[in-house]
Image 1 (cartoon, rainbow over the protein chains, first blue to last red):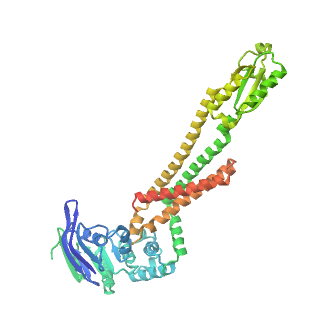
Image 2: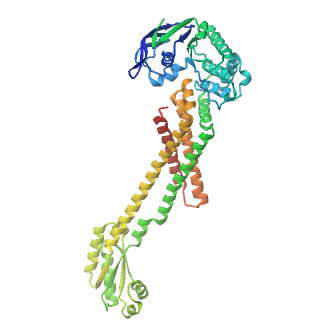
Image 3: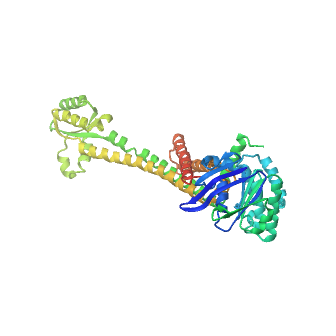
Length: 215
Length: 276
């Protein structure tokens, strides 16, 4: 699904990633770990096309995305769900409105959107909160809404940057189980975290240190 | 499963007019500013057409000639007929004694005036000749040659100054309207820019979920255009029915066209500068 060849990323002269070579298969569940500043977030941002690599090649579903044009990015991103540590939800909006935004950008009909929102909220256990404003939800609930949003279009790839960074151990367990379920259903999941406790959920682990894959 | 064209259009309209309080404030402010600018443009046009400086000046322009003393009626007729033949002269009027007294009394003591009232004629000039100072000079010279003319006042210098002044007012008016029009676009730009700033988080999230540039831009452009239509509509209602000006539908359509363009261009520029 994803192939990285000699990937480099420099911020001015400071190296963030150096000579990364990786192959992630379809249906894999990979945890990228390493200390702060190792380049985990940079790697996810490059995969999400939020940053461009300085050098190297990235193949995503067979397409070279290392030098993708700006106007093609939104269309490619529709194949990728992204979960952030800080959820990135619109707090004033309800759960329903946050999720419908992800469906509207793909021009799905209202009827289909309604159906998908209910189904995905059922999956993350938040159907009863469908019309509640996001700001009234707990951290764990907000993260589940963010996950629901990222999977509502059934993307083949799900990226998560420190998704449990703001959650207590109980909620962390709950969220990771959710990722695991999605992975069992065929979604490729890549999670960046510095929490070593989460490695037990991974099928493959990539350790980054000072911008290089260490093992 | 996917929306039809009408479904997409409805969604864009819905997104354009679904605003939080901040967005509504910026939208309402844009309408108010367009209302003010449209009113200023319409008002200036109204005022300007009302005074119609140049046309009034040209139609009222005339030369005044004082005739020699003791002319007989026949000689007077001959003078009038000769002046009438001069190219550029529209018509000639021999003033009545009372009119002359009234005219001269502005400059000389009335008691002295009554002792010797000269015979005075007014020479009206073709409108198309008034703006041509060379032509005025030629008419003046032709009239001076007519036997029996004692003194001729063409006020040529005054014509020149007046025409210059009118030219300045006209150019100033056009400049004023252009400045207002450009100002309108910049103000809309500013309000849409502020709107973008207030919803930057929402835009960022839309980009994350795969929204294309058009999907983000279109509702804001629709909003800018709607502000233009509403602002100019309120302006027309205000001018026509509250101030009772003679604004006609044609002018209203021009203002609508301007406001819609200002709204559209202002929004487009703001979105472009923010690289949405």
